Length: 430
Image 1: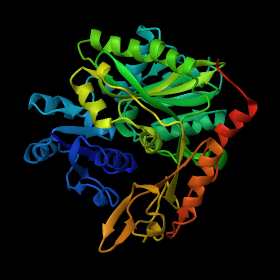
Image 2: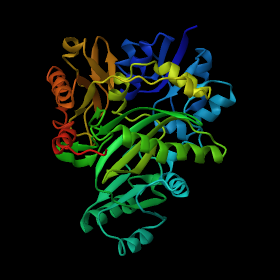
Image 3: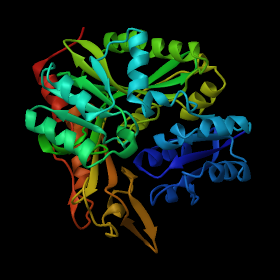
């Protein structure tokens, strides 16, 4: 019997999830709450306040939802999984305790230290004075991280004394990260190649979906402020089978073991953000949900049933599932509003979508208004290109970019460039 699926969230990641479920033979109906202009075309959008967990619960009950998928991190950190499970509803994601792997940098760091998982050296700081005194004995570059959730923007890399002073001002004087920065993780900055690994976990076992590389900075050549992500590609040239096996054995399995030992088996997506230094993986961060925009390249390459995978995970039967992945490469380029991640305008009419309707374009900050799609956020659209290799996928993605127009359209022109440079060097972790 086909099942009803509810996806919580409104970004490009949620559109990609809705797209995957809408094509799945196991699924009869897809609901998105609140969704966006893109999800409205393939699913039923329902207006809901994700901060009000009781309201979300009522929605799932009224619609007789069989499986709920949580897109963003905040509902997980607030305990939505605990609430749904208490009411006997099936939901894919970790409980509030498990969500601390993302919602508290220091919780994750301490757990990794306990399990001897490779990570940069770190120091827990409660005051500006503690941070300043440690700066006196540590070498730059250093990283300052707000312990709590800060919409993916609570990390400041400091390469110079001036940048360090500015970071202190941002955190302690300006209070930019609010309560999220009540504690600070001061960390050694690792220099290497970034890699993200995405796994589905059922409390004991895991299956790796794929790897990806995100592009966090706003401007080309990794310049400018951090954003939610300006583009991504999957898989990455870094991800040899040998390296991915190591990530599973040395990082993911010990993390699942630690959570089970603490009485909170981890069920959900585990996003492992890594820095590869001299061929060795070191954990930069954990997320307990899929990344955005990485989801927009990882899911289109998945050829097996996402629904079956997640359903089996909620039953603790992940071993029954197979993960089948395309041999192609996927690249996504984010089309953003001019000014993002700072101030930007909303309400721009988006033109050209009809000309690329046979291509994969995931909506993020969009709304349907009358017969138009209009912008409603900083990151507006994610175009996805495919190819037999990275260069052809890049070319394919940027060809789609040229077809779409709106006032103030901004995008990075170098998505995938680091991957090409890596291939040119001929580096390998074998």
